[in-house]
Image (cartoon, rainbow, N blue to C red):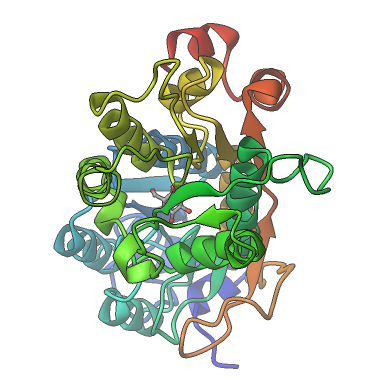
Amino acid sequence: MKTRHPLLALSAGLVLALSACGGGGAGSGEGGGGAAAGGGDDGQVTVGVAMPTETSERWIADGNNVKAGLEEAGYEVNLQYANDDIPTQSQQIDQMITTGNDVLIIAAIDGTALTSQLAAAADAGIPVISYDRLIRGSEDVDFYVSFDNFNVGVQQGTSLLNGLGLLNEDGSRGEATGPFNVELFAGSLDDNNAQFFWDGAISALQPFIDDGSIVVKSGQTDIAQAATLRWAQETAQRRMEDLLTSAYNDGSRVDGVLSPYDGISRGIITALTNAGYGGADRPLPTVTGQDAEIASVKLINDGVQYSTIFKDTRQLAEQAVTAAQAYVDGEEPEANDTETYDNGVKVVPSYLLESQIVTRDNVTSALVDTGYYTQAQVDAGQA
Ligand code: BGC
């Protein structure tokens, strides 16, 4: 195995000693390039954290949680958001490398767009932790922390089936027979997770599509047709409007919508509400989601959105911090999956967490009792 991070492979004491006498760039071979770890006078470790966007509250929570955990470990943190703009994120990471950050934690916007940055990080001996979204096409991703993303998709598909009454919560066949009109939405195809969510959801839905109890009336059953670039709410709203016009102008009604993310769900719900759904004669369909965003949790409580998938970002942040600490200590982080996440060049050792279906029935136990939100936040729909 090639040694990627000579600086970090040294014991903390040695780093201190070296940086005290070397005055910078100790062990990194870069000579004074380090803003904190290299340039500091006390061996201060700096971790660069690159997050995609502040338009979704989950990434804000992720950023805050990762930052807090790293600071608690005694590291300096360089947290950046890229406004969902690929060149901005590339630049931020370039800068993290040139200013001598010691470890990088990256939630990529486009999972394939960071190859040259990662090569530069490897050259500089900086370990890279891919955060939640796998960075693809690069040898230089050292570790991946995420959830079991296929299972997130299974949970989305399963909760849609629960909401339609085709499946009971214990997994047995429900009383409903359909046929139900269902439309399918996917995430952003440059995000590796989108395919995993889709595959998981379709695996749950397929038997019901095959036996005719679910009908995708638009005929748009391909992920490329269902995709939502950058997971954008407005894009999803527009597609739902188009689907209503093109496939439901004969008086028929949408019974269910597979949505992979709460922002997308809200776009879908807006399109449906604008088209007259939500009354007694035309109830809103069963709409799924993901991330337990506070606005959607309120919609779930109010019976508007059916479900979301709760992924506890506190746990994910904790795993990212643990992995960063391992690298700082010159160790390899502990993986619990070394098979699933092939990024096209290598299988990236991963630590995967479990997620949970949340409906109106368990908002309190899953989200309030665990301290993720307060009851007041849930009631207000605002964090
Ligand atoms: C994350 C989801 C999130 C989506 C949109 C995915 O990579 O895993 O939790 O809903 O991005 O931000």
